[in-house]
Length: 101
Length: 150
Length: 101
Length: 279
Image (cartoon, rainbow over all chains, first blue to last red; front, side, top):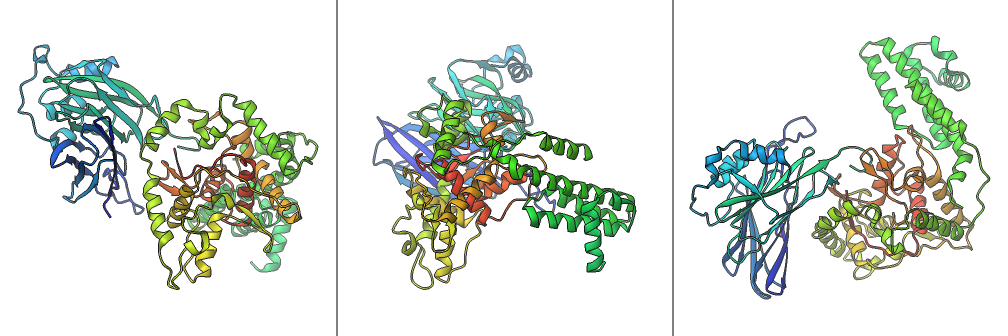
């Protein structure tokens, strides 16, 4: 299952998007039980595409909370597709797609 | 807007440098080491936008709590009715202040909501890039530790 | 320390916690505090985390060869056990006055 | 250290002893509810106490509402749903114990007359697992909190209605034990649940405002920002006891089950709205 949960709703032509991305967002400042620093590991880039066109993109620092939440809005309509994807500092990626409600 | 943070952001540039150098607009906001690892807000803006002269504006709406319930999850919302190209969130007191930059293509609302980590009581600044200029709004968010719940 | 001595130490501890302070080895004092702690817990259900911590600290000091510090901590633990016992006794009636009428 | 002890002991001895309470559970509940109505008249309607400390703290409520926009416990509900629908080795599943969607919150905690004990939902989940040859889950967090979150989510809107059957004096005794727990000072810091969550509710302990106890039982399990994870009610009980330097009791042991019986009964009439996010 994807690490991304998307809720996208058409409100009079504006699509209200809410996403939650499951990710530890390690800051690199935390230590594990043995006192060793846990290396930083975080989502750097998030991109949202609707019907193949980029409608929103952003870059995160490690100061975005664990399991990042992101909300934005763009003009679109019910039934359109919305794909959200992320890439973290290790190069790992994930994406999820939904139909706008 | 807290005056000190304006000064801090604005102080590094000379008065003459208020006009921004025209930058080729990036198609997407992308993580850059230079901007996100900067230790000062002004440097972060310089590295992200090629300029760091800012103007406080009531057109930039920043929603953040006066007292954070938990510094690990502070809800922050930036919204503007201006024609925004980009939105950024700066948390002054964090080791690297720039928390987020968002690219706002045409047809997308000048809005971003997220949850941030804050190490201590400090100013949160919302930055909106519009018409080649940077507009800001900021407020102090208190972070408390202790008691039973925190 | 055999069982008889343990009971003896415990009895001393319960009857007059300070009387025992000058006699016996530090190890015995720690054991007496531990036994008293368990006894009060069994009788009343009242246990303080700080007592356990103090007993552990006493043992650690003893293991490290700091007899004086260990002895002091053992006595502190015994005081805490006594305070726990007092709390249990007083509360067996006093809780009722906090019930709204 | 000695000074603290002396002060504690002095405080204890200094208290006067009042007459024993003789009221029954229903009178208790009404007096309990009235206490909070008088203390927080701004909480309207009374059902809003289901939102815990946010019912009395408008500034914190705004942040909480922002978190509830996409609450972190949704991931837990999903995991819980998977566990709930998973087929056991014997071909059965949790559905065979709790129905298609597990919306059974309003049946717990209840008095089990046959066994003479309070049964909570989490206890019942493990009993179902064990009866079917499955491994029981740990009570405070993880998979148990997830299953509980899923079942709780499906139970939203149910009205708390804990019963203390009058034909079994042991049920009343269990309730009384829970009640005594709630009002009894424990730990080195010498606090009763009621000291913080009743008599100083709404006031600050260092940086934190203490929540009212009315509504305490309506929203579990909870995703706590402090934990960065889910936890059950008994996890929180243990956390509170640790805070006041009292050794916590065992999760799902008699003490905490009876305490849950009491606090849930006190919130009878409120709506169940778990799982929830808390600071």
